[in-house]
Amino acid sequence: MAKSRYMLIFLLILLLVTLPGCPRRRPELAPEPKLRQSRERLTPVPEIPAPIKRGANQEPELRVYVAETGTIRTMKFEEYLMGVVAAEMDPAWPQEALAAQAIVARSFTLQKIAENGGVPARNAHASTDIKEFQAYDVGRVNGNVREAVERTRGEVAVYGGEFIRGWFHAYAGPRTALAREGLEFRGPNPPYIKIVDSPAGEVIPEEEREWQAAFSLARIRNAARQITGRDPGPVKRVEVARFGPSGRVTVVRINDLDVSAPQLRLALDSTVMRSTFVNSLRIEGNRLVMRGSGYGHGVGMCQWGARALAEQGYSPEDIVRYYYSNIAIVKMWE
Image (cartoon, rainbow, N blue to C red; front, side, top):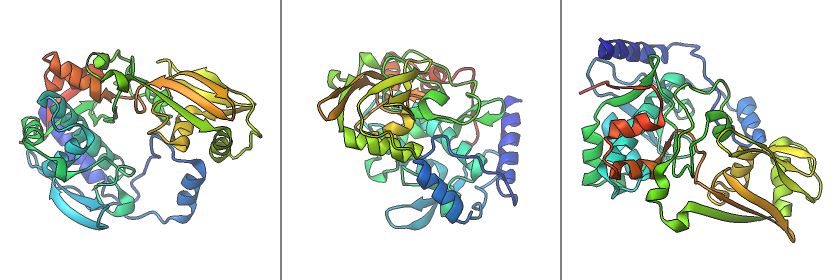
């Protein structure tokens, strides 16, 4: 009965995304405000792409925008997913971790298609550009990835009759985050997103557990101005103004100006300021020096934690349930 219920909901959602005037929600984490406003004002809203292939127990086909060539390619859902799993996680990792990534990425894809058609700006259901959708690299697909995807074929995570927002990140540090503190998610925190301890410390290399970054004060000033539209002036003081429930910094005060920590991380370079789990920040000369732990926004599944759980003998489904509370995992197609 549960499978039939979710299959019916699945088909109804696919029908809804093709209707004219289907509402589009705003993205979870806003890009730099000026760029977002420019897109909203100047870019015409494209049509939602055609629905993905319908039918109970039938694997859908996706229109995938291939960013490298600027073309649209139609491919089977599971074929697309193999390229995502291979790009988002080390293909040599334990198969249970890769399979958990497959369930989460499959759920992420279906949720995005149900929400706004996927990538309507490209008239596609998905994109190989990580800034638009998920990472994708078919060149990294190996037998381990293929088996991991196949063993979870059609499996998705749902809550309350809807596909979950399948957020994931590289390394949570000591614990995961709520959606608002990690992503500045607009709206109530999804009930399945909880703060959980991450077991990643058991497997992640010591050199990857913590990070340090330094930025010129001029760059800090420019980032604050870019984010808020206000100039804090020459930077004399930087301090944490607010912490979130998981212990992550949510607001940084630069002189007397409050700045979103998640947006500051993006503006400064999220591969350098690896997370908002900041343990210290101080001015040294003409630089702001930060130290912290974690890599990514911290919401949902921690990939290094998934590897640790896999090595402890967890099944792919139980790994997903560890990071997303009170969900059901159902099989949408054979």
